Length: 144
Ligand SMILES: [Zn+2]
Image 1 (cartoon, rainbow, N blue to C red):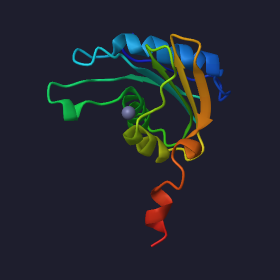
Image 2: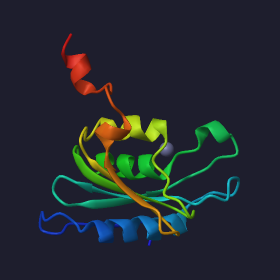
Image 3: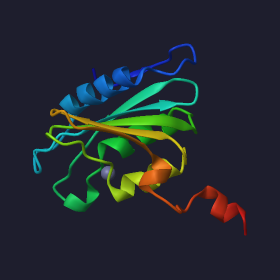
């Protein structure tokens, strides 16, 4: 299943489904160097779900995280607002998105919900504004 996108009649996708989609997306991760497969699933404003996985590169700096893969897929498909993202890591504790992903997510949903799920009992549910307070966003450029 190389691409997952489905619309659920503009009804918010249950977070459990989003978390399961993130978990499934990790199976497609290209992580030969870190051996740390990550999956992400996000929901856009109209209920469409996009998934992503991390894509590593021998030139490590070019590696792309699962969250950003999902964001870029959504934007490339014409969406501009993200309401929720779920991130799965194969760990015992929940792992929050990295700083780069927080900034990229910020562009498309300042107050989106951010869920982190893992193989253990750890799970976190927060907002992007809590993870990236006083953030820089598109409105800063339009306020010139
Ligand atoms: Zn990241």
